[in-house]
Image (cartoon, rainbow, N blue to C red; front, side, top):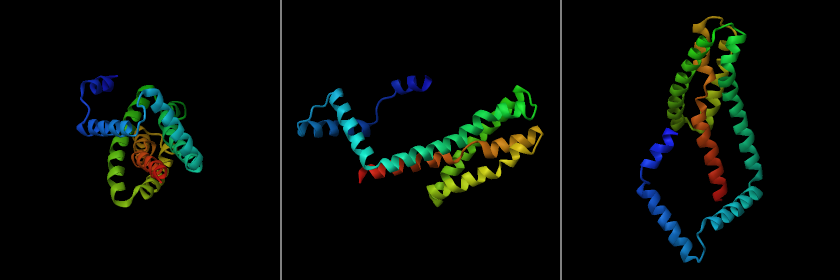
Length: 178
């Protein structure tokens, strides 16, 4: 809610305003109507064309994103319950470990984003998924707060998500342009 209010108070960028004006002039010069309903029909028709042409890539993107979603949310959402029930920690300790995990996510996101600039998105995703898999034993073996906190900080939070969103978005954008 706060972000929406802040967004309402900020003006549009000059680049956006110029692009919107250019698009409006281009549409009017082609004799197209530019009201909302017509734009919606154009969008839906172009989406149908894209799905007919690139349906395999769309299925790939859905399966790929679902896998990464299960990877991250399966750990983020279930970890507090897991350590309370299986390891016998209190709700306060579970909350503290989850906060530590989110701090790990912030650091992991910055590190993975920087590394992906040098070694590429695909290799970054593969490396960070494998790195996350190495932390799985740190969820199962330790019974101490410190051991589990290290496990949640290193393995639970998905540093590869920064790389992932750019990868999938880039693949779909590139495929629809061709």
